[in-house]
Image (tube, rainbow, N blue to C red; front, side, top):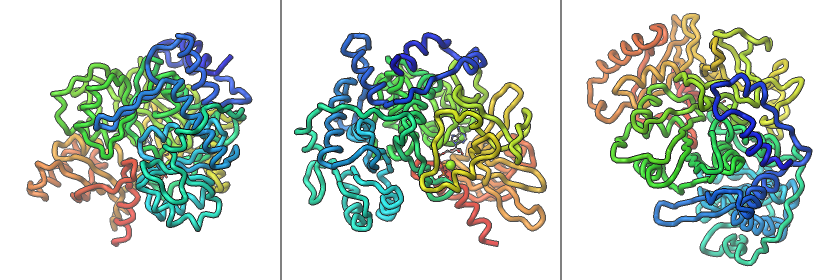
Length: 565
Ligand code: ATP
Ligand code: MG
């Protein structure tokens, strides 16, 4: 049987439409890993055949807008034909062989999706990167990844040229541009003449498919190797269960093209279910254009990050109607219950939180049909056995905080990375007993829901108490003056460390008496959460340090605190 039938039609028919019966879904879950698997051939081309045979709705495969009237819509057949052209360019003009690495630094333009599929077809290894990289970052990434080819645009080509001489593996450069550039192949021109006759390589399921850089929240980004089955097949779990997609859905994910989240929600998850991938080439995140797009286009499923939701809920949305929207999800950081509540007031919809890493597919999620407990990450994805562990790798009972681990022995689940590229000691350090350690702390309640406490390094130890910043930040957010905050440990001569909150105030509170406001906020936290968690130190700042993908870099603030004594 073809995987698309297993993943979509038959599997959907065989599993209940919702998770009111979570236990039986978890128990019955099984995907046979085929020896050979290639997402382009086994999934995309299957949708294309179904399209031709009239077995698929007219829902496009890809729908892109630029916000200035520019629009691209492709069927699976058109996506197939264009990606085969690019595949021929990679193997012929660029002389790339199966296994060679291709770095793609492109904003949200249609060529980014073509590059994804063309790499699958040629068996070359895709390495996406954000367009916000500096020349130094590009040099580091080209050297460490040993990429042979780079695809980028006018904005970054000069930076690549400045460092190319130091990258001995780099042998071909493609630019997406209206103009020609010395030493570069012009992709738009080449596409005009390329043949769309190409036979997809027959990749083994465990062959390397792509390398993603982590977000770099806690240090320099790490390179994560994924195979055709770990992401190509694994992300169908996200599409089927967490995103609840079908072939009539239109899915919009706002994340940057440089992160694994775009593989999750802009490529593999939606296409595994035959849904349409919607993309908006927004140069900057603006609440008004997000609301406008959600109300103007038939988007049914929306995926964004907590930082974006926190910004969106601060804006008035009463003039917009979200006629098609039916499912909203968030991942990347914990989402505060207060934000979920405000989003529901604006849109009538819940936010279904998901938890995962660049290293994995969805680890825990809130699934349709399951009761949502605000602040919880939901229950383990059907693909993983997730447990809370002590320092010896023993499974802890409900209610006890420990390290979040995924069982990898005796059978390694699919949907998990193979290794940190060129870093065997780091790879080995994530193993404890039969488990892969996520590096995050949490606990499971008696109903089997998982609660995120903190990244291991972010836990605050004050007077013998262990405090996770998220809970304090969520309490802070319930105060009307707080737009955002980051909570870290700060040195204290008596308690060892104490809780310190860095707070960004909402604009209308900036002129208030700051000392009085601090006291008010501290009293508020004492009342909303256990008093020992209240921030003994408070500092107002203009903005929080964040990664390109919008995650709060608590470790930067923490380092500053500890150096100043
Ligand atoms: P780096 O590993 O480079 O420091 P990163 O861990 O932020 O960066 P990602 O792989 O993008 O890189 O993020 C995964 C991490 O994000 C998780 O380990 C977890 O700490 C956090 N995370 C993701 N989703 C959630 C969620 N729903 N709730 C809490 N934390 C989350
Ligand atoms: Mg990480």
